[in-house]
Image 1 (tube, one colour):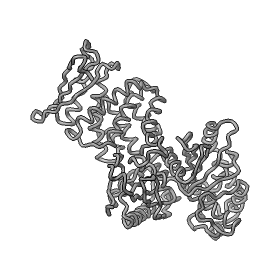
Image 2 (image 1 turned 60 degrees about the vertical axis):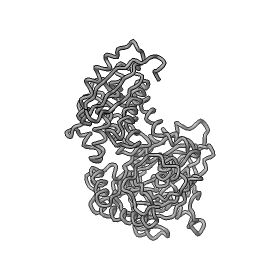
Image 3 (image 1 turned 30 degrees about the vertical axis):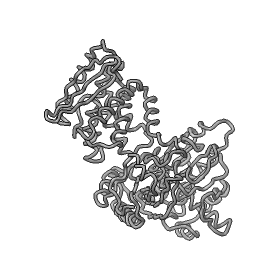
Image 4 (image 1 turned 120 degrees about the horizontal axis):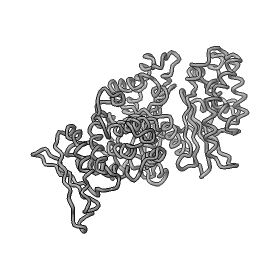
Length: 553
């Protein structure tokens, strides 16, 4: 096992046969609004399963009430970097071969969130993936699945974080509903709680506000249930675990270890909320098992859970101790080919969701799939010749090729710009925010002007490396689009030959119909090849080859 922590944590290449047989030690970090959590696990690929061998948690409060004008506060960022450094040390001591880190609500929404992630990478060499609310919900679902048997029955999962609350519906297979709502224990406390103990009017307003924000998501979730179907409610993360621990100590005299599977009723929760409402900060902090930092935000978190249960009309909640961090582990196992049977549906989550978004925006999939096939063919034939991009980049190019024309859903004029917007805000699952931004930029530059620094969307890319990827792969996408200019499949195959001495890339086109001169495709390639030539410093020549029928493959 290697002792160093690699800087990159985003490889999606399938592991080698030898690597697939050996155990892996992996660390997963969740940078949340309230806390930074890490688990270190030993993965046994033969099962496949994992065992938690270490944990770390630090309440850094990135969503601190002192945060102003949508910015992460400097003291909070300093606390976070110190906590992450401790996490790195622990992972190192456990011989973790990789750290996979994700950031959620507070960083996602802060104006300086991306700057903060760049600071983490610069100071610690740790790359952090920013994920959307729906992607956070999807990974929470994966984490819960490792801890509970759903037996094909509907389960609703509620995860109350510092900045957002996720609601998920699933029966053990692909999730049927995912949502993330901007109500969280830290956010609500910072924005709406000014009295201590909370005043009667403030408490009633807090409840009404939470209910109003959650009603739409709950209604949409319930629309996915069959008539008469009674789902099981599962609760995850710190607020719910704290409420369960208080309930267990008072009703059992002790806190079960593990807390996983512990249940309490809506009526008991309502009684606990009523009591918390009457207590000031010091009195809440004095409750056995309550940490000082949790006592500041526990009432707001309890109100969220109360309103969720009330709106869903569910009487019992079951605690699950696994959530986002464990879901990050499962996602890593899936993307590295370590899970084949259990959760098999998740291994293609990215491609399925790209097709789903394409269908949503009425993309001509037959054309887009041809463009994608050409793009991947050009990518493969020029890899290690003109570029060195890996399979992760290849998948981003595929997604952009499928979605490049999605902007037609808005308007034909400037549809490449509309494609960027729709992809960027389309909640693509299975991808980080950085990957979504990259896909959107690739689609944005499939036509018209090449990437330029003055374009805001191009500046939004996470790093110089991502800008280089967009520069090079969007040039490939332009050629792929040109190869199906009439959208009738006129070109059957493209073969690439690179002549080193002349720095020339020859594209040999095989038409589907030997009688078709493919004039429009040839014209389009000639028109679009300039960007490719400038980017790769090559001359592109095109030859139409008409092979004997028996030779065409």
